[in-house]
Length: 366
Image (cartoon, rainbow, N blue to C red; front, side, top):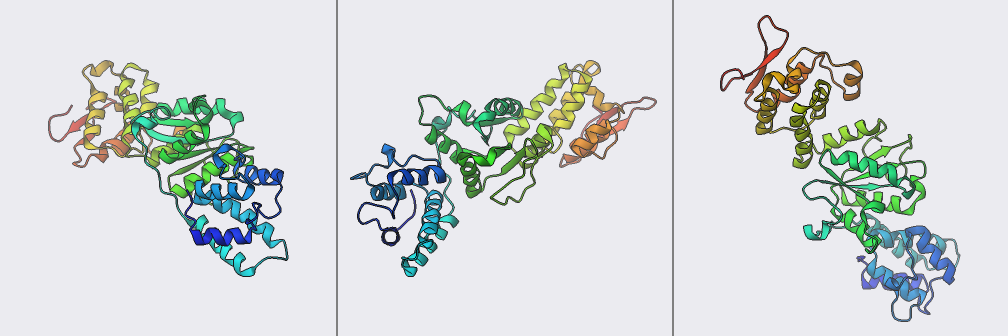
């Protein structure tokens, strides 16, 4: 619902000549195009039917049901039409322009939804990521959503998540209202859609994190976000999300579960699992669990034990993740163990050997 006051509505009605049931000189067709081109909505839908159903009454209904940002966009178009004519009241025009700017600058309140109401679009207990995309790329976006699930992220992919029997617009709004972050899946045709532009603007107005993920080197348009466009593929995207949600329990759980399960994987998988948890803001108890997994009850067959060797980090991995350390054991010491608030753990080279052991200052070497 917009925040237009009764006095503001009367001013707009006078300027747009709505007293006779019309809106300026719009025909039924051009009136329909106004709302379709600007907002992607059908103003002749029964949702906007009010009293006689005239153009003026449908505009009044839209003012009541639309949010401030949507109403301001329609006002901007109408004011540009009024300004192109010679016959208008400058006083009314100035007042209407002030109304439009007030609506543009208003910030919508993030609506609260019950967990039961959201169970059909979000997986519980995970980071909620709304992916704004063109429908022609829904298959690629669905694959990306599956990949992100491994990191404790549940994704809203409009064409996949909405049930056929559900009013799709309401579900999209529900997803936008309840998201933790928004991902713009930027393709060449991204900005040709009214919906993707509105979804991005909605996220910006709510103040949630926005990730601009350029699939084919598309540059952002319109809103000026204070973040860089992500161009390095999925790895770069995941690293950016990790930095933003480094303390989020769901993200940490997904990554740490993958790390702990590397006990049954390969040595290469163990090294990747270490790199994957870089950037997380770890609690002391989580660091203790990491140490326990590396040593484990079956220490000498545990694949994670490779992290205690002096293996070198390949240059391509160092470059991709901006790592300055030379060995995986240095990475373990400097980026993981050093986070313990009490400085409890450290690495010591075993005498006459080429591998390290983890020392616990609160007890004996583990």
